[in-house]
Image 1: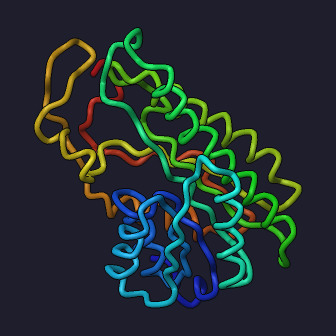
Image 2: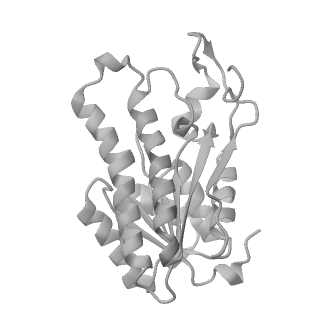
Length: 255
């Protein structure tokens, strides 16, 4: 377990903090004593995350659309204004499309996914670099949400899968460029954590062979604990890639 005394004074930004994985990670950090700026498009959901945490003024909801670099900059400015620095970015906001043959995907929908999952994640990394290299002491940590889809696709998921593969490139390049600024960059790849979006796994989802099958899931709190572990490492250590998944989900092997 992370030491609350060590975490006291540490500041994190969690994008997509209004639900699911973002909420679970925010609660894990807040429970360990972190101060957390919660970012997302729906301020009511962010406020609910803050209220459920019981963390009081250590949780700061900030309405943010990550596809707008000006809003991402304003998010970091609000965290700095409140607490003086930023030690961690959990770069989590993302979206997918309903499963559909790739030849039927509208260009506008493709661009929406790229704008959120790739460009939005870059804007977060870029702003984190600008803040972390200028603060004293210099440095910090960025954890990108990659997903199992950063390794293997599901049927009819070309937009989501392509952007999540691209996140791996962002992680590697930022990890390299962050060395000179004491910025550690890593990636967590999550498989079948039970959130409202993943509930469909328990009812059956398409498989590569065309069958519909129920897939095992895990408690989303385990994702929060995983990110907390990565975030709690000393500056000289980094988890570059971390996979946490339901043990029996169809990922390794042939399905």
